[in-house]
Length: 79
Image (cartoon, rainbow, N blue to C red; front, side, top):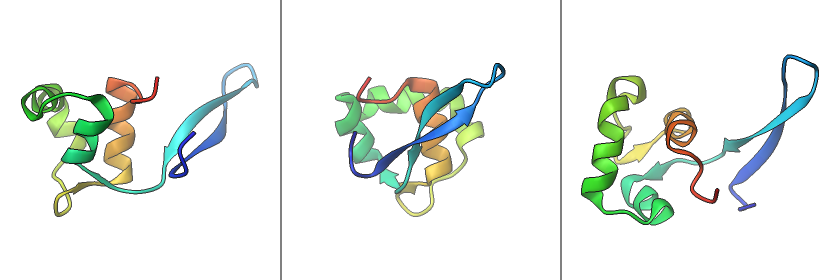
């Protein structure tokens, strides 16, 4: 696990804890390109369908809430 991610327990329906990753810092598009190992054009194609859900960038960075949506949709890069 990387130092900028933490695992946080989340209760599921049967009382079983389910762990999800909590993002603790903002990332830019270049960071996402390196995480997923894809080109800018590919990443843009992946993000286009969820643009209304993600919203605009803050400066050149995705907020932690935006990254959570991206990672839950595309999968976490280390998986």
